[in-house]
Image 1 (cartoon, rainbow, N blue to C red):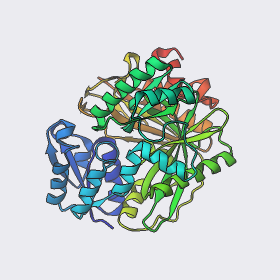
Image 2 (image 1 turned 120 degrees about the vertical axis):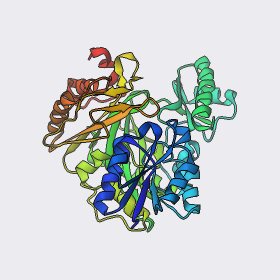
Image 3 (image 1 turned 90 degrees about the horizontal axis):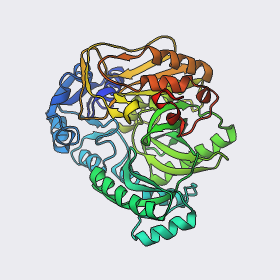
Length: 447
């Protein structure tokens, strides 16, 4: 087991990893930028070290600074969390070359997962159903147009190196497709340094369902159930739950087998997620593989009793997957609280928080780095907290989450807490009628 772990991240996920390290008896080392000097993870960790100025490119994304910090602090391994360097195969390879453990998959698996066009081709060859679309990258706009007409509009132009909704555009006709290719390529190049694109049929009314994967170096790969992730803003998740409403046992089993097949095709180890689209008539299609721990991992932990972060650390140190139960018990729902203003296009809302209140009570878990007196910086992702509710049944989890979200308070900034409360309290969510359009009904209080 690693004895000293450097956490190459910030905010709530850094706090989460620190707590896992503490339970394992492992020394945690926090890194921070000048803007995060007073962030909670710096005070909770056993040790902390500054890695640069506020700009992410000069701190959390600056590989030489991260590696130097690990060497100075004699870290045995690095946990990248999610975001920043978590899915950067170059970083994982440098860790390997420097004889520093990387708590995640192999560089090769990260590279394949990150090249979404190549990953799609790999899992398709393994017999996993994929959304109709291009085989490989779009090289010629004329061929892209011909393919779009063949599979039928609307289509989705996606960045091969993409993530977080960046480099993604929907096109409903020829002109829109031309513009979508141009805009998505520019955005992908800016965000990822890679303007490569591929094309998929836009599956209207489809739900977003993902399966949690764990794989160890002995070749054992398991799934720990699914998560419903269809409620999104700007292609980024807002509310997730497990089990997914309406999935029959046979459908869940087929999707789970497909997820395992995809993970094996990629040669995956550690924690990851196979993501699918699920149509109203219960067809499912693989869309991508996320080579990291997910923001929404707590709901899987709540229904399985498995600490996924501790499993990551154990697996990366060479240990086999623990003897865990794969069948969930109960129901769990997570609402992400962002420092954003839903009434103004989910614009960021940084600033000082003079007073805050985090909810509690039976079945409530809050993963957060928020505290009274904290200043939300403008430089990073705006996620403040995750409010997770567990119940014996879905109805109990909804009731608990609704009450907890009403309690959540963060003065001085706008957040998504009230929007999430309206959604989970609404009749549509309660009856399990979930889709990507649900947010539109509740923004500005119209739901």
